[in-house]
Image (cartoon, rainbow, N blue to C red; front, top):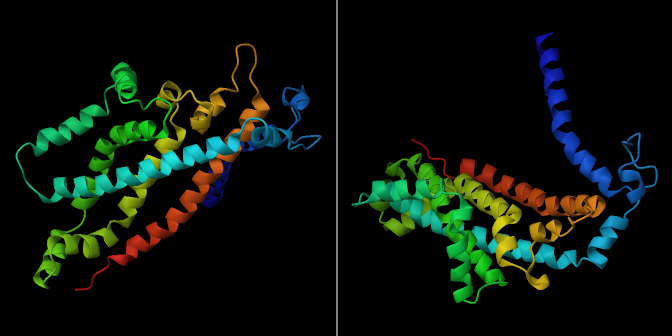
Length: 271
């Protein structure tokens, strides 16, 4: 009876969790006349892909998708590399100011982003980086590096220093020990940091809508915001855009999951 009750509760919770995703999917497949039809239909009477066709035919959604993917991948990769190096420095070296530096990293996460919006906008304007993906990536990297460094430092603290010392006794340099011994064990942490940075960049709207106004440089969140007009909201196109924008994230999680599993065993030692 306890197992049955547990299964029922978990099943009900799973349905509650999945239902919003299901509703977005069927909304994207409904004609405009059925979206607000009363009584509500839980499956479209007339299945249509017109909203998806509109996305790629009229809204140039493919360009927005490529822009978001390019910005998110490059920004996440740079943030992860900096986080690997910075986290290693904070975890393995003692130097004057390490404590205040870590505190400063944490404090930056407590400051509301809109406070720095004015200075950031002026800086991007002076550097002629408005309406450029490079400027958006620069801001994303600066925004995500502190927290990502703290995350990586936490993963380094869980790895015994004895692993590196054993490699150095065998003749490896510190860099070689880091790359060949520590990094394989750190794969779960690296994957987690990359996913965190990628998702943050992929979903970010506030900075993107401030710095990007050109049609050629719009990202997915900015493009989806354009479906909201003064007098109407194109719910069908927005639902279709949501479904399409979720796919790359799901694929990334599926790929990274394999590396996480490999990372759990790659650094195993005996004795």
